[in-house]
Image (cartoon, rainbow, N blue to C red; front, top):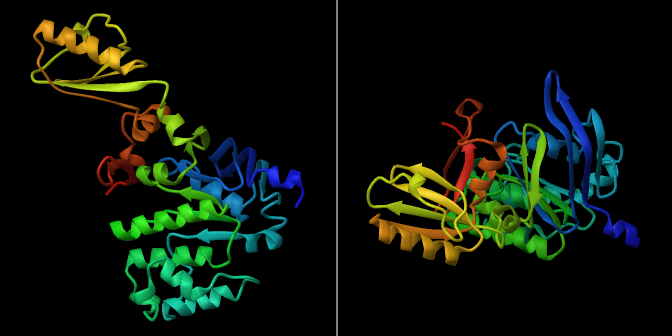
Length: 332
């Protein structure tokens, strides 16, 4: 491998357009994923994430623009490329009558230097279920088997679609550990997820896609504005109109969140908290709680898309996904 090849992106999309009849799924989208990087794709349902991944996997051609994966055209060079990829699907592709280890042994024969099927069964937490038939597995167990199948060929590049969907918390954490291990070994990972905590934990970079366009692509900390600004959130003991606040040292724009809560942005949290609490004390406004922190990824997402919530008519809502987390998912 030449130095130029080593430095070239693992994935490169240049002004890609993809249409399905009158619907524009991707609208001039450009994105690069570096070799060895874990990139998480975020966006509501219908944003264009699946189309983007399908173009990279060679299942469709762009109507305009250019797609290169590991330096190759995914369609024209599909035969040379596919054995270098690992693809995890949310459903399908499994033989219901075969046993777990039999499925992995079968798929391992498609590769010249596969991973050890027995070791891989253990690695994804299915050691006690290696003799179980696929049709007997729970949804979370099938997800773990799908992950193992994506890894059996020792891929250079993995596409993981909702890798922890349906998993219990223990299996979820174990799967995160596997993905982090891939990163340490230099495997490039493209992670499509609705789980914001998962994206923050695993991704070197997060790409936010909406209406077929790339709205942002940066590290989780950069997207949240860490080191640039902080968010103060205040709860008062009784209804309070933040319009009453005068200009205070360190305190930026203020937004009402409810009758007794408001938020403000500051680049100097210590100064802002000192001046705000002093004013509230002198004004006789009782403070129930005051918190400071970087913006959440959820807040960044909603801000970039210009939404105060996700549209239920499009089938996506925000819902909790564990302590301090949020999840983009399908509306009931």
